[in-house]
Length: 138
Picture (spheres, rainbow, N blue to C red):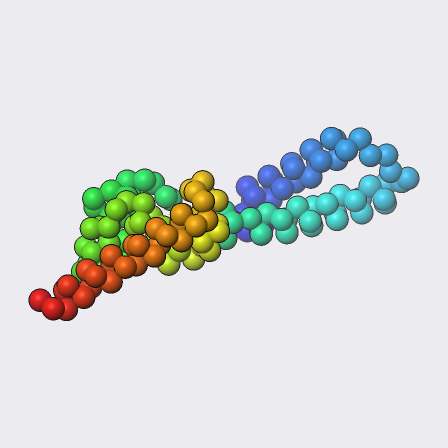
């Protein structure tokens, strides 16, 4: 699982499944096989979960605040242009391009319609492009 705490959580979850299932086993070997198989499947499921792939502090101040802490790794010129975008546009671009989430995942996380997220992403890219072109002209 990657850490002692995650392994302990997985173990606890498997034993809770065992208690909740009220299964009766033919012998200890069958019970052991069930526990091993259930533990393996549970661990696989945990690794598939989106929060296991990317754990990020999405503190609203960091992503949406004026200081743009989430964009500290980005060239300061680009970070300034990103700060000019509306907060929701910044958040969607951050989740998609920096964190690598798919549009459908972002829609689910933000509890927005998929088409709304697509529209906001398109609008954000368009605004960012205009900001970049404006800078080239100057």
